[in-house]
Image (cartoon, rainbow, N blue to C red):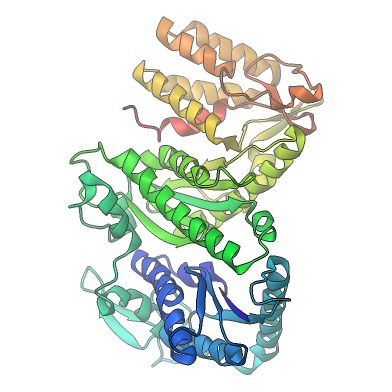
Length: 507
């Protein structure tokens, strides 16, 4: 028999607050429970040599156990979660018995987990009306999450009293109570020679770039379910799960090492913080000046681990905002951007009829924006002109395209491309149609020879492979910088380049 555990609503627990200490603590608690404590519970019930660990990571775990122990193990693990998180996090456990002891069926197990979660959700709804939170003069809600009743008073960095509920208090004090465990970003810095002696960031201010910008990189695997469906035995599952866990951790650590190893004496605190790393799921907060190259490297490194697997890659959403911008809003948009990237990637894959690997979308937030990228593109990055639909973004981009865009921006910066021209390019794009073409070529005539050469290559999309739909017989009705996209939408990449310009550093 296999017992399989899947943590419920991971992001709701980890990102219940905007405080970096609580976020990192919550992520570490889940890693600790799933990688260490669940196995101990299984061992205590089954004894030495009477169980087999299949996998255990931040998102859940699975063990092969005696048939008569399944219910007891599930009950013990649920109690463990309630106890160690003060009721803040929950986990779903199911039993699975195949035709043989070595059989595994991803489809059947996923369906059992889904039904169990739905059953728990229905039970919660039934009991919703039986408990209500009241507010009285002598009661205080948690200053961190604002949801639970505060039971403990601590001092914040400014010496002010801060009231915390038991859930947030556990998150805040996890590393204090478990001194042998380090936050993942402190573990990863050991791979980066020039960052080993740099202290960790304590808040988002520490991570931010010189002008105060932070990037949130949200990555998630593509085609994971399809690959899991091909697995038919426990031994195959063990190999795949171990490789997945190693792939993402090594992809992140190697990417950070590649980008930061030559940045000597540049940072007072670590310029990144791993907020969540569970299987193929990654949320990374990083200095905005390094977001694009790090994201590209993570995707490249991840794919190298799975050359033998069809289309196993990453979708990535990058949100850049000022350090004072509401964290929850950045996270919500990063989540939507990731979903948008996955959806568009699937559409492009159908058009091309071939594997396309990892893809990236990004947004620079400066004010409140619509909740979804589709709505944002429809309302702010699109227009109708002369019965044609124009779109001012070419996102998402493949990793190869992102590399080329980064190279173009670096070359423009190296040539001293006038910043005043960036606003002119933005204005030209928003004019749409032939007006854009005319305005862009007017800008070209005023550039010096070096900038003109690079900018002309950029507007023509040289090496960017933007004309992916010409295979379908769709040819542009407008000159560059316009290209033809899905559903006959005419799009350009220039506005994306303008948005990237501030956050790509010349080396």
